[in-house]
Length: 307
Image (cartoon, rainbow, N blue to C red):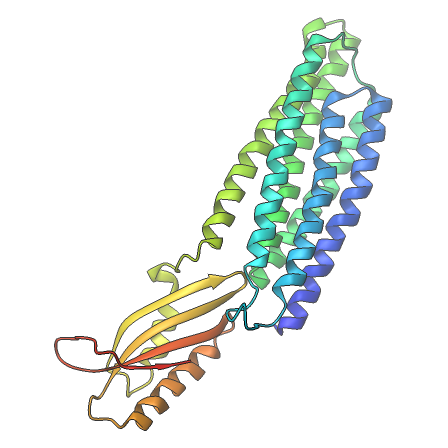
């Protein structure tokens, strides 16, 4: 997939999230007020936070597609991971607010919700699950951390809506059959929603921070790159291969050994061949190669750097 096509798809998905969350937040907030449901109001706040999250993803995607420049020679791919961290922080704050609101409701007189709250929750579950599946599949296909985190934000909304549905239903049943303690199922569901949101925010935030800290890919993930390098006959040994993820693309730092009696020009030619082959990989954006003279003890000389 061409980079411009990738970003168009990702930006469209982010805007779908913005518009969808605005509509859902309005519907759930209105139904929560009319239906007297704390759990649904908490769920509406969750959806409203998703608007900010989708906007952060959109802005991150716009920044990530900028070409390399003097200050950012490796490109701007990490802008997506930064956007993902922002989404995770917003999600965490929303979880705290939902929990606080739900706990406070225990200290006020409660009355059971009405049926409109149930209809709104069911509608939200259907829409949010569809948005999760759409963004998750697209995020995996185009290797976008920001979209994948945003997709799980929608999935957390599905879980929270399911919890709200259980709480609202139990509270309505409690009011109908005069079972006083069941009325509190609505705020209990709100607390459960808060815990789900906090857990997901922590998990997604930790993963996004890990991706931002310039970590290298694991050995099993770089095997395809090793095979590409080894396919060049003039390469006697791979002394070192590090692949760093920069958002949706990879930058490779490579040290290889060649015949020590090669001319500098021949060594440079081998390095160019290796680089060109690696750049044919769909997710590789740049390759930096260090050429060493091969010897039986695999000692490394200073060599020649190619970029």
